[in-house]
Structure formats: C-alpha cells, structure tokens
Length: 175
Image (cartoon, rainbow, N blue to C red):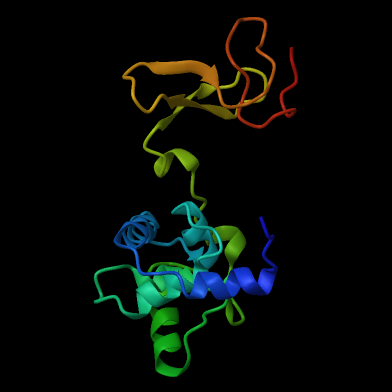
C-alpha cells in the first residue's frame, strides 16, 4: 500500500465528503465548551474523533445558523481568526463571558477547555482515582455486552491492593 505524503493527505481531507455523523460529533464537542472557556479548532476536531479536520470545524461554524456557541472556538495559540467586525464581535462576546485577553490572544492557560476522552466515547466511563498517583483510569465496556470490562486500558502494573493502575503507562509509582 502506497504511503501518502502530508500534502496528499491534506488534499484528500479537503475533498472529504460531507458527513452528518462527523458534523454531529463536531456540534456535540462545541456544545461541551462551557461559558468562560475556549477551545481551538484542532481541539474540537480531535475531541470529536476526527484529528486533522480543523478546517471542517471552521466550515461547520461558518455555515452554522447561530445555534452553536461559535465564539468559544478560536485559532491555535489563542488567536481570533475572524476578520474585521466578526472578530471584534467574537472578542466582545468572549469578554462578556469573562475570558481574559493578553494583547490580541486569549489567555489560554486560564481559559482553555480540556476535553476528556469519556465525554465522547460511548463505551467508556471514568473510575475511581488510582491510589498511587491520583489520576483516574478509564474502564471500557465491551461493545456487545452489558457488563463492564474489568481490565484497564493501560499497561500500568496493578497495585498491591488489586486495583488497576491509571491510564498513563509508567506514571504510577507503586507504594
């Protein structure tokens, strides 16, 4: 199988057909951004399960009919990508929601929305925090069964108490 170059992959993604499922996933991700928080186009695309589709997120917002909180989606690095009056309106709306700016950029450190995997994965749910490091593991449900799978997604070693490690391999310190 021929491996695509980066340019060919970008060209192929730009010609990707419209998909209602993809657009619904983008809408769900955008609606998950609370007031006072922002996310980049790339973060929204990745959270919806379509990394590298940031241009499709922008196109969805451009043809949206005002029912999405479009002002909470910004460019990489905290930039407002809209020009002229639209950019001023986006900045004004964000300031009304309590978002701080540093020059022309949003203070990303204070206002960035961090998406969590289980918010979008219908077969995953968070569990209790790992006793060693305090991070929560994610337990996956099997697609065709109703019981929860006891095996964690990670490769962390089980702790002496028998509980699974966290979902970040190698980060746990056994007590």
